Length: 323
Ligand code: PBG
Ligand code: ZN
Image (cartoon, rainbow, N blue to C red):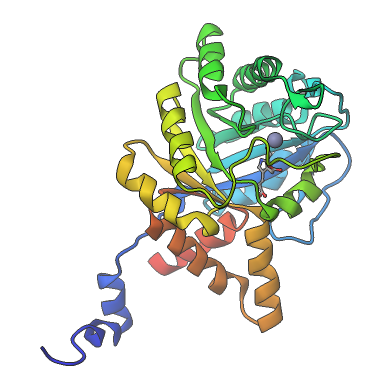
């Protein structure tokens, strides 16, 4: 054996390129978007987390679509909240209006919608609370109504994130009964209870007003439990499954890739992106140099689809590499 046999291919850029093991395609990214009812665009201090009023959604997305972003995941930031989160299925809600506008303006775009209650309930939990605990039946009913209202607006994929048992099954059934057999489901199957959601909760104003989400989200000490959640969702009819946060759960992603036949997404959540930003600033590095390392590791672990607030920058970077 000659000493440096492995590093020989590292010595020139073109040889590094031809021998690199992971290729990322610009088509594999989903960009989260926060839609509110009215007012002006509110710029966030975090990259990619602005709040956009529904009547400006098309002009906001237009340059992103031009630069190659093709999939968006919409979150609503409503004005009105109540105990049941009923504004979530309002026909004229921010998500419903934004979906219609986007589908009308951009033929090449796929619209994913987040299906949950936490931005819409006055207590900020993902389900309907009664006597201090979640009423599963009512929660599932409302989640199904939300999914159908998104489908009616033209969503391509609905994405339940409430971690309510049976949510995929009941949404699938509701969609089919309403004639939306072609609307797919991307389930937030393995969603951990995490401190990394804080910037999101700030932007979406969805922080729980009491307690936390550990009674329905997964304990971060557990891996097998996450795998069981994902397999259950596949059984229930999920078309795409998702793991989040991404970077803290690469072992879960990798274990799942070996078991699953369906596409798998990983969500690089708000706190992960915030860490990228603050670390880069602190060290005087371009955000993207840190971000690409994160994204490639997520891809290497086995996630085919990556949801990230850095989607536009990552896509531009990848297109530049191809040029
Ligand atoms: C809530 C929801 C959360 C995220 C997506 N959907 C946060 C939570 O559970 O409080 C987090 C996304 C992010 O942090 O970027 N259903
Ligand atoms: Zn929620």
